[in-house]
Structure formats: C-alpha cells, structure tokens
Image 1 (cartoon, rainbow, N blue to C red):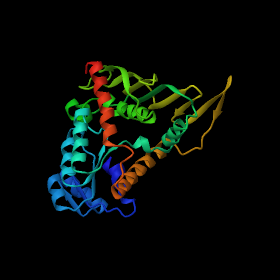
Image 2: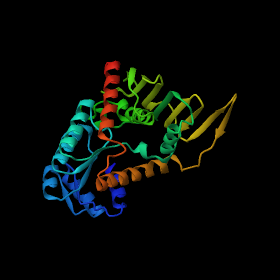
Image 3: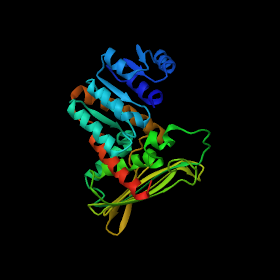
Image 4: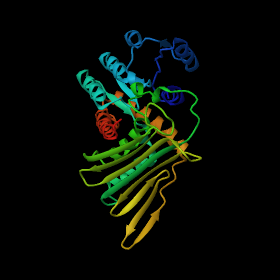
Length: 317
C-alpha cells in the first residue's frame, strides 16, 4: 500500500515533503527512497524519529507492529495514520488511542472506503432520512478463488489478529456502523470456516448483528468464493426506500409504487477506489495542519475492533 497508494498520493499533495522512509529491509528502503527521491531512509524507526524532523507518519506494516510503532511515533511528538486493520484487537486499539491522548497527538485509522464519493453521497442521503428509518443492512465482499502459492503474513493469526473477517469483514462492519452513526450492538453471532483454503485463520465468515435501534446487519465475506470475479455489495433498506452500493443506486417509495433514481455516475470501481486513497491522504494532512479530529478516528477504530472481538468469540475462533 505504501508504494501503490500512500507515497504517490503524498507526493501529489501540495506543500507536503516526504522526508523519510523506514523498512526492516534496508536495501528495499534505499531502493524506494531513490525511486521516489526521499532524502532519508532507515531500518530503525526509533532512530529515524530521533534524527529526522517530522510532523506525521503513516504506518503500513503488518498489524502486529501497529501498536508499538504507533506508540513510538506518538511519544516522539508526531501525528499518526495507521493502515487497516488498525490493530489486532480492541484492547490494542484502545492502548493506541490512550497514547494519542496522553501525548496530545492525532491518530487516524486508514479506512479509505469512508472517502469514496459514492459512499459519502449515500451517507448524506441517510442523514437527510430520505430512505426513512433503516431497518436492515446486507453486505458482502467475496473474493474469487485463486491460487495461493505461499503463506502471507495476513494469514497468520498472531501477525494479523484474524483472517478474512479481520481483512475484509472489518471494513464492511466499519462502513455499516459509521453510516448508521454507531448504534450499539445488542446481539451478534458469527460463523467462520477454514475449509476452502485450509489456513490457520478463517477463509470465510457469516455475520449477524442487531442494533439498539432494532435494525439488523447481515454480512458474508470470503477469500475463496467459487465465482469468476470478485463480488462486493451493500444494501440499506429503509421504510421509504432502498439504496445499493457498487454501483450507487436509489429506489424510493411513493405510496404503492417504487421509483428508481440514477445518481450521477462518479466513475468505475477502480477509479473510485484510487480517488478514495487520495482523499484520505489529503484529509489526514489537513487534520495535522488544522489540529482537527479525523473523519476516521482511532476511537471509532477501537469500537469496531471491539465488535470484531465479540464476533470471533461467538465463532469460537
């Protein structure tokens, strides 16, 4: 993510200097620094923070390292954005939040879907109550079955905190809770499967949640869906209409009939995905400059991870 998204986006952000890069592989750090004209590179984050004047850092390392690296940066007096998953558990996330508070620094979770233009348009629709009272959300992210040639760090529970529920499910849960202004979860259940890829972590999961406003949430996620292409969808069903994402569509109830609306076309999925990361980077920089709380806060990230913790306990994983 650093090379695909964050570094190019920061270089394209006005009045931002990409001052230093750190990687445990010093040769890789040097190569990336040369490629992107970064003055300082290191394999020691503590040394980098001591020697290089920085305003903020972005952490894009395996999840097991997020807590110590975030605390180190915050204690060094810089603001932090942490890529998703924010942490391996709610307990780790709350420690990161407390560290930010104690050091009077900002900590932001990198949840780029909150910055998608179609998602923001739908959130405004929900806030205006144009769909009435939301009573059900259905969501899914199913990646097609592929060839896994070697283990990755995110398939190691100790390194990642979980499997597909932590990888894909967390993002969909975050979006649903955020769109609904974080209602309390009063009931939840989760079933996980390890049968498709035979990994240490779950490769598929199904989730049910009920909120204190009586709305329900259904979720399915998989790393190995038997389909020729990936599938991603979200539906918000309300008393006066229904909305869908991917692409954005709206249906409104008018007495005894339904009227379909076609919102402005904002671009294809790839373009929306790309622009969401650019908007996320610029939002983080604006928060650092203006000392404002980020749209995707550490507190909300911790709340979402608490929900994910409960789902894993429900599944027995």
